[in-house]
Length: 424
Image (cartoon, rainbow, N blue to C red; front, side):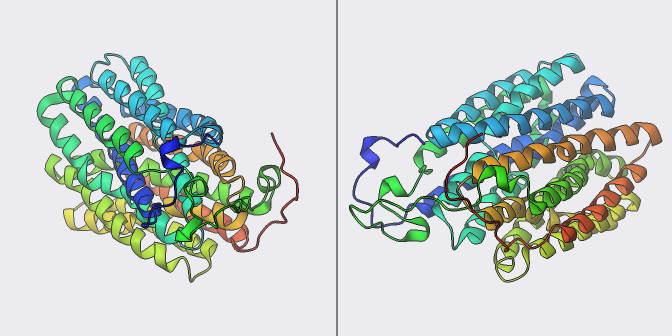
């Protein structure tokens, strides 16, 4: 990993920098999720109305976005082991901003696929792989709390940024509105990544969780399961398959949610839907970050997947504002925690030694669900003419994920670690 600037290699400050790292991570994820993960549902709705394109064709571009993002995430994991993680995040700020500038000028579905491919680079470089990696470097004992706070930025983006983006695009349209979104993306990522995020505690005279490093004593090497052993384990395979199913249901449900609510209620109510989903996710994630430290982690994830499945079935048949928002609240309670628990499960079982590579590989495999969910639900919508069948299938996928999680084994049973490092 590249060393920080010489000005940072001094006697450690009196205040532990780890929480500023969490704050910077929160802001970066708030921006990338608000305009990326949650924002895709807004762009789908706007493109469908302004361009008149089929939902399935727009969903195909969304699928391509997540596919490219998963592949680029593996590359990002390698980059952050060699270079300052802040440079990688800043590159995501530049790339994502350029993609949003191009989004308002697409005139054909194939152009949308190209723009979303570029956007995926920005989303991956300023997303969960680099951010969770830097947080796991700074926190070991309090990792659950730190990750829950940092990843709450995902939901905060849905509360603060996504409804504002929908309001802007509804009134100004894609061509006039997307340059403003590009500016928000750049300003919300690049300055904060350099100002608040610090790449590694050891080079700044700290140990994880706020302990001072002993001057003149080298920091202990990171411990954990080697990459090649981890990806062959029953736990990794089982949890990854379960996340394919759970994220396929979750991401597909989120990407179609604005259109579902707008069809069954009004445009203003649809804008409120993402806010309620994200707000519920914030509260639930902060609670989950504390609960997960005292309960079996895999079983907890399985329960959440089951509740998500129930929420999907409820959305399939909800036809009033009250029943729709009741289902959205339940859905939101599962969204944030399920996403947060994936890096926690990986770090708990396999340690921090090869965490970026193991987690990025898990995300790469899980993109089958992440990318396929929006495409499947969009195709089922075009086939049936409404969202009942789409969300019933999403619910069934979540239900199957419950069984796979339970068959994967506990997260706190470490795999045997080799004494010598292995390289791909």
